Length: 497
View (cartoon, rainbow, N blue to C red):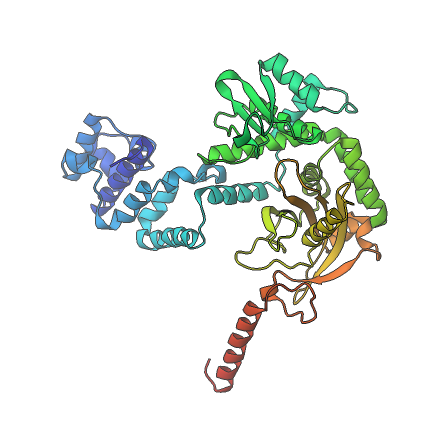
């Protein structure tokens, strides 16, 4: 059986623990009988140590079993769920340490209630199979949870970015460019940077960059805009400065080999945003933006920020999502990125982040997202502009979304960009802020009556709006809930509770 050394340690420790408990022995009893110290037995049972042969012989003799029984990978029927869990490699795939959990701690819980916890884990895995959840999607789901736990602000990366800026660009008014980052990589780290296109490397045309690590050769797609090229190079610097051991070699995911790759890619991307939109310059601009009294003024300020900071809409909104919770206490917010091919009826949610709680809108499998969301309506508007050859710059739109059948309302603003140079897709990025008393005090223009208001819902399948011109599907889930509610009421009237 193919077990890692870590799994063998855990398995041995749990087996020793179970044999000890079956014989009603404490760790002190076993230490006294075997001559092995209590602290060492504790380390063994937690899967942190694997004892040498003489200690295994002493432990086996103390419990009246053979050496072979103790070292065998075979488990009792009660422990079979642990065996299957270790065989599945799920402990290797789960980045438990990020959440302060040791694999041995999880298995200790499983050892205490193997049937219940095994059923729970099996259920989670079955849900993943039912929804075709790939390992990659699982990794990204874990990353989203990790980011949300930290309110999308990572002080260590911010400090590393500040040190880099102090070294290469101490003047806050001097912005890093693609040229300055390329010069840094070539002169300081010996990189060779080459441009490619669909003629030189036709099979790589969908990628922004590819690193050939043995040669320190970085291939950049020639169609990248200056801000995209700067971000790609900044991300490469991030891998170096953050000492990333395991990292992806391409800009877009071709294959995800481990969670470490997903994590280091996020950290390097965060670093790139931090050096391109430096904290000491962006924070004052965001603070001023929050104090503007009207959305018209705030919209103008956002467009000016894009120009001043030479940023992509996505990088700007991401940077704002770093700062709003940490510096201004605006933590009830979400970030969304949608992709859309003009003429297509499908809108693909490719990135989402929710702080403080799960907000609406959010990803829903197999349903039609509400077309009244500003994230989607501005993509539809952009496609119309492109047909008229009027799409010269990103569309900036905002609305107050009031959820039907809910007390929740959000101020949502975002930008939609024309076709990207690499893929024939439009995309929109949006930030949403929950409308509550605290946020209305922190963001002055939220009280602007001129902001467009729209009644929205999660999806067409859940919506009771009968006059919706954007409806894409009948309210099947809503009708099902109403049928169940009517059935419950009928049963209650008959005295069935």
